[in-house]
Amino acid sequence: MDQGNTAYVLITAALVLLMTPGLAFFYGGMVKAKSVVSMMMLSFGSLGLIGVLWVIYGYAISFSNKGVGNFVGIDGWFGIDLSSIGLTSQVAHVADATRSYPELAFVAFQATFAIITVALISGAIADRAKFGAWMVFAGVWATLVYFPVANWVFNFTVVNGKIVDGGWIVYNLGVIDFAGGTAVHINAGAAGLALAIVLGKRFGFSKGIAQPHNVPLTLLGAALLWFGWFGFNAGSELAADGVATVAFINTLAAPAAAMLGWIVVEYFKHGKATSIGAASGAVAGLVAITPACASLDPMYGILLGVIAGALCALAIDLKFALGFDDSLDVVGIHLVGGIVGTLYIGIFGNGVGAAFGFGWHQFLMQAAGAGAVLGYSFVMALIIGFVIEKTIGFRVKAEDEIAGIDTVVHGEEAYAFGAERG
Image (cartoon, rainbow, N blue to C red; front, side, top):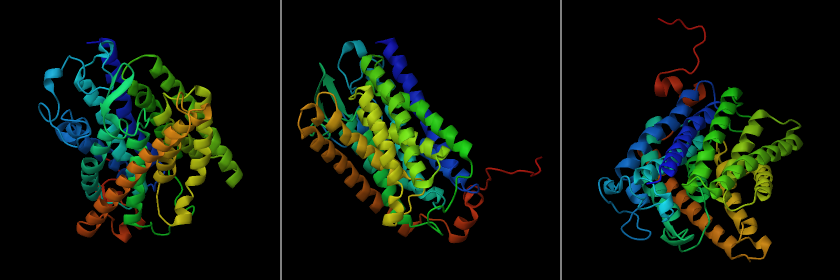
């Protein structure tokens, strides 16, 4: 067992786990002051529920060893082959003995991906969702959508630098997705779009319906997300090596460039460059670079950032043009950003890009993989959300939504200035 790589995988897993509280801050600052507790609890609820489901059966579905691409396959106890503790991972991306680490380290790392993916969806239904209904959706969607899609994208084995088996998206289609552009961001963005349709528009839905109630809280969340994202991207190499360093520098350069691209568009649209725009631009760049972080030279990473920042800044207005209420721009940032980053590999990816004379085959495969995940996640989320809405109800009462839902849903207030304390 390589103690260095073991430590690397565990540390990067901790970094990715920090992203979910960071997301709670990022989302929480952008909603009403009387809905911030509810918004943040959607992320923390996801952390609790998906963390448990992952250990019980999520890992078993996502990383089945019973055969290539199977949805279900339980080895050992609750899907974790405990006999491999201290030995080379049985399901890792690499079969190089110099990169050996305990399987449970890989289990922990991938658990954090499942948690943050589910939490991302919640931004689309801010200010109007029941907590209990959200938890039901989170559990069912993770079981029927995220765990199988993770199997398609993340469950593969590499021998001597070549994928020899695995889920059909990376093995059969040959899609390149280093850290989860399809499995995480397109997946979550498509589900967010479906839920926004199911729950309908907030009362008074229009441009400027609600200004962020706490800008510093959102900036803090963006900073924590960016910090954790180094574990998300560089950690996906599962080894502290040269590929990880490429992923790391691209995770610095692309979001920095995307921040600039977003605020330039914002300035021409509104005459002002806002801090919320800068934070959103950085997140858009992080989303776009996720699938491509190990496939691009840093200069092309910067170009991707500029493109993603500008396109996502424009895409957030799609909800007004098309009439769906994606409260915190999950579609405009994660779905659009994930698609841009995934397709970009087919144009500028090292050794595969059409811009370098390798033809359009990789681009077409990238599009096919993105489309498959988008379609599957959207349809499944639409069905799950619709069933929940028609049975237990997904949306809070109108009067509670207008007043702010923290007190009604959780019996708490985020801010109690001047209140007496015993």
